[in-house]
Image 1 (tube, helix red, strand yellow):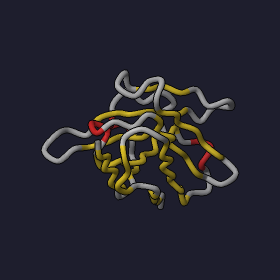
Image 2 (image 1 turned 180 degrees about the vertical axis):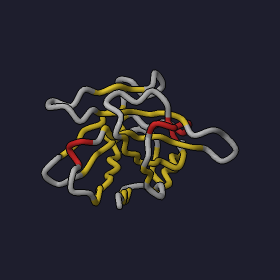
Image 3 (image 1 turned 90 degrees about the vertical axis):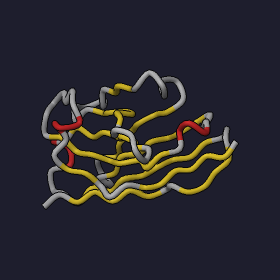
Image 4 (image 1 turned 60 degrees about the vertical axis):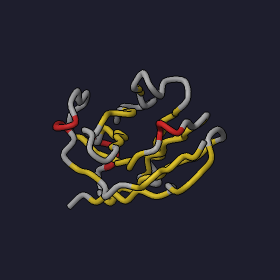
Length: 124
């Protein structure tokens, strides 16, 4: 059983930095590609960032967050992070952590495991 638990969300002001964390309960964390997604009520869940399971952690970002957000992972702590810099009100959403056994997942349907989400609300 793979469990993902996100934390770090809340109500924050625009600008500055906020870091989300996702702890994964699994013995083989290093075999998973990890991703962050976000969803606004009434809209589809959208891709934010992903980091590979490979040594060095190859990353990929949505254009809307590129240069502002950073995904990273600590394999010893079985944790993936999303550092959100230069926050904007339009970044407000429920943020989900996800795990995939695909080496290069292209679709959210290729992420087999999901956390329950953490709400991030950014005021202007």
